Length: 204
Length: 204
DNA sequence: CACGATTTGTACCGATCGGTAGGATGGTTC
DNA sequence: GAACCATCCTACCGATCGGTACAAATCGTG
Image 1 (cartoon, each protein chain N blue to C red):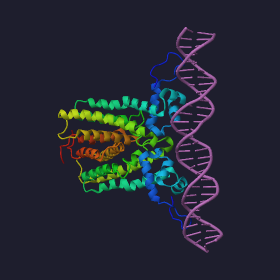
Image 2: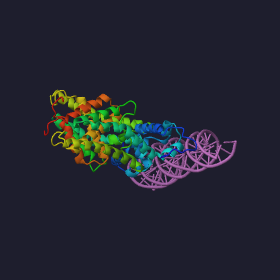
Image 3: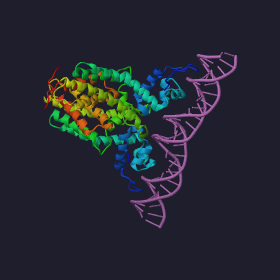
Image 4: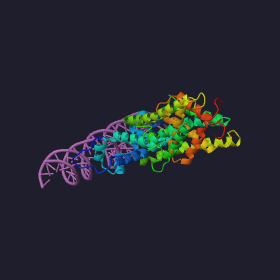
């Protein structure tokens, strides 16, 4: 991590965040283990020693990429939670997720899911990092819903923990579908179905 | 693929399906690329040339493993579609999925998802094979729901294609959660929420 | 028992993996 | 311009990847 820019010496020939975005795309498309250092350096436009001097190693590069992914992609979905009602928050969360998962400006799907759900034993930390990121989003969602429950903004007896998990699971399932080529309209139609769960009468 | 057992020569010292199940577990736990041949042969209890003589190569071994996974695991979820009503079919599908995803007899999660959502370019076929398997399940689900729609067994105006995608997406999202350690009860509580979508009145 | 057929184990193949040493390069400062 | 210094690039490291050659071992059959 280069925290301070030196005043002397040869300056870097690349912008750190630019090449980090390129690396993020490679991880996003091919997963952690599927992204070889050669593929990474090719996409980033820098050579191997520059990568190591700037980012440390492959795992640290991935952590930087994942952090940036959170700041840019996941943050927009989380911003949806600021909607005034629980219904609007969930709808905005799911709809902006579906949009992001199928945005042509990025690879399809979600780095948090396809980055490395399953890894070789020596890369088990990658799966944990991704799972922690997803758990953080689910936690934010659950907090928002708890507040809604206190305000009487949810159907009576609704289990907010289960609801948060349901919304996250659906969003992650949509990521799986998006990675396989599902269209934005397909995902939004699935969201339409999910939202029915919020206005159903309780009980069977 | 050894289609016929030879009448002469040294007999195999292992049962083909037994070692295939062991291989399936390794793929299931670590994904296609995360499962090294050494890890596979260790778990299978056979050595490398035996693996190649019996299964061809790593990709063909995976295809066999995935086919067997479908026959055993996915088939039980698909059997749920035989329930008499659409509601019962969906509930049984989601509940048996949730049970299977958290069955302690197997690795947590779903081979169709963690086998290789994202791969290196030379293994892109693996992702396609997995996606095709998931699509086949979704197609079966959609067929069942179309039949239900004709029978008036679904809320009026329900989009069966979207509903099938919704159910599949939720199930795959549950697979992501299960892989990260979610409990069976957590997944079933999420199913409870999802089922509300089937009894909600139409419109907003 | 000897033969042919098949599987087994060891030991190896080239290619690629993530990671690095060390000299050439280009910029800043005095 | 000269000293300094961080970055860039080529070329390489040991380890592991998926895959295989070859010979010893083990069976059914004559």
